[in-house]
Length: 274
Image (cartoon, rainbow, N blue to C red; front, side):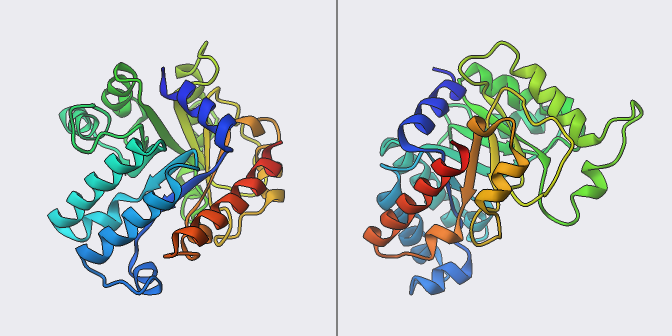
């Protein structure tokens, strides 16, 4: 099955919820853990144990593992493997963007099944030119993996690039979305190339119907609401994968509380997109 087909099946079965695994120092402290590889592993694997059997997607943020060096990367490898084995799709949040052989190396690291970091999908930045992502997208397609391309992010610095006009008169974001749409042409039930569109961007005149999933970070603690989801994604609600981290993770470390909080948020998400 393609990534798009697997994701569609998981969203229909478990609800449209992506939970980030973001073991930043504040979360580790809130869980009573040390800011070290031991605390990192207890946190990451605790989230996996509690949630991998019930949510559609788990999204580790690579930077919070990388900051612990090689020991942190080893934890990330174990968390990715454990989450996939337990039934969740894993979207690795790395936001990589480069050219040529370097982009191919990132592809080999994240979406080639022979890699110890192989995931179901990754996030990527198109701002070295959309064509620079070709090695990643081609490799992902070859291995039935997915790629989520940054399009309209909710950080305040984003508009200076994403709202800028191209020589054709469209916004940069519109150009990115159009290229994602073209890659998903004819895919059923859903394409494997998604777009990242922040839940808190407010009104947008861009066409978000790209034929693939729309990762919507920012729900919950970051301020995104059901009303925001409906307003931003009004014409393509069935493709939206809302993403939250702190709103669920701060219920830990007790696995029962984590599971219950994720179930509550997932129920809210079903209401958002139905």
